[in-house]
Length: 388
Image 1 (cartoon, rainbow, N blue to C red):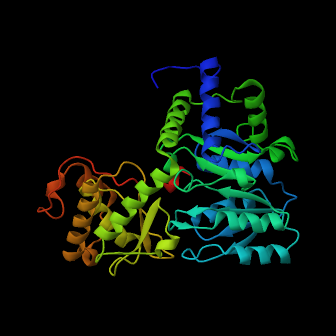
Image 2: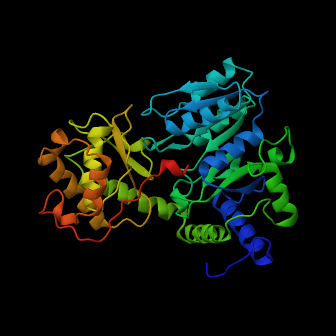
Image 3: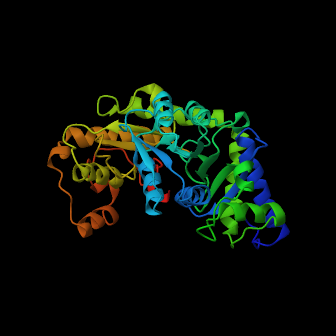
């Protein structure tokens, strides 16, 4: 990160090549796939994958059991693509058998799009089983793996999805600003349509990297270097060890908050990336949740800031270097908030008042004065949907 590399330097070309190799190594070093980095967040990579491999003449089926599946559906429909949808409740995993039966009844479907881990609730959908059903029906698969990559093993050496999309942040624990389209070489080598975008053209970006080692556009070189370092750290730690680290945070969160809030999902469905909790009585809408959020933020504790209204649940991220003391403080803050009755009486303050309360008042002057919180920032890393 101390090297100020230009995007056309040989040294930077090697950094990019190293980043691509590391990504493939983490996916089983599959020879039939290649990695195409995309400048931007995860949503850019998903849009790049969809625009590069799905045309208006195609008929994709989009499986939806959360907000990220809904986003995929919105992208293809905005282009005028005749997309079908299969909708499940956010607390139900996608059913491979149901998807297979749907594909059999609709032989015109060309692509299957779904999310591996829906961070709406942290539910994990069965990746390999769904891919096998699609392959049996001759359907290509495009998978959002942004909230599972790096925490759950995805082995592409055994013929996984045709396209897998992920981003640098979240489980890779890298910086935002770089995302990846991991695609089968068969798809990359056989262009079937005109590109919609210069920057988001996956095939031409791939050809440029394969032939010259250079990006087609000018990338943020320091971000690429940082992403490469994050992948090296993940490779050294291993996906299994990282998953274990996240699972411990998740389990400690559930234990610490027991008696105050309950997990939304059963353990076999819950991702290690984040844990969703059912909102307790007294929090029925976003305004009610805002009171709890402000209480936590006043003590330098941050969770995901939105209440998922369909399930009346909220999420706490498990990724990053989360310390046990932060989890204990979170439990203490939760208990003080609900025992004081603030959940029933809280009303959202005007924006300026909320800002002043959070910025100008010291932590010990807000909420419960007896809480043993220091001034250090204890951040429970969010699952940041906005960066996708």
